[in-house]
Image 1 (cartoon, rainbow, N blue to C red):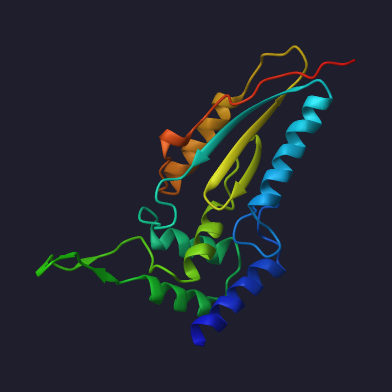
Image 2: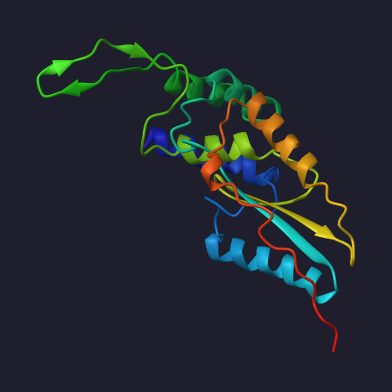
Length: 201
């Protein structure tokens, strides 16, 4: 019960202050992957209908749900400084995450215990809230749609223009990922996915 109440408290603080990026569609009430696809397609088609072209890159973060590579101190700093989580709740979250041990067992053989510096317990509400807090400040200079760890960068080009800034947008993304100890699953990066112009009848 205490765990659930802390969950509601943290969500209330974040949602009330409207900190979540408007185009984040994952793990949010009344939003889903369907809403993300509709919003994404609407932005593309609106550009194409006006004779512009669209370039898109789909990005997937590696092991985002495990948060293996995320420092707990980084997470707590963001929760406190960017989202205004009360200090007492922040300490509770920190104590829940930190100083956890894990080991591997195969048949009757067990490894030694190892303390986790990142990661989180599976099946907890802290996982979704943590990742939304971590990725919320991701900005590349392009139009960004997010559905949890699935991120889409879209660039609109003017008619008959080949001047693309997508390389700069990707560099901004990679710099953000490096600063936040996140890794990209490069096998899932596609781009440019689309570059077409509508024909006026």
